Length: 218
Image (cartoon, rainbow, N blue to C red; front, side, top):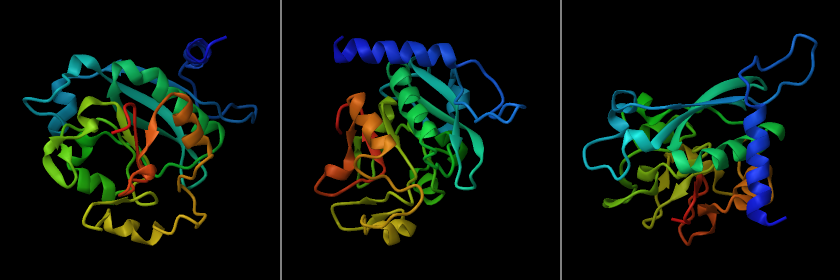
């Protein structure tokens, strides 16, 4: 079976399992990963979208999914992604859930008025946000297409070309030899799942972006 066919099969299985249900069963069995996918509207995207964005609401999807929090409990998060990467994103976060990888919070950028600095400072995990790149607003960010994801932004900061750390609170996590909850590490459940779906990790860049994954490597 080819890599592509294996991924399609895995995605189909996940879709079959995606029946909305409480995170934990009454009989005490382990929580299971569930999710829901729905369309979005311009109103729902709020200030995370504006006129001239490369992707319109009709091509985007709101994914509500379960994730483990830093408190050891299961929470329901929301993330907006391009319709073509829904299966890949669900696969990755399903693997993260199975490994109990903690995610601080997962809210759409509409909740932050489209402000990436505010979302990063809040340690938020997100995808779609129609904006320029952090250090050059004239260049369209891959987040504008809905096929890039930032995870646990404080524990996985971005170091720009000027050496500034985004968010500032992430400076204490620049020593990647540390082992702290929510830190992404090569070979963990998240980075392995991302690699399997063909997404690239910004940690490999000359100016590392430890929180960032994208479908096209940018």
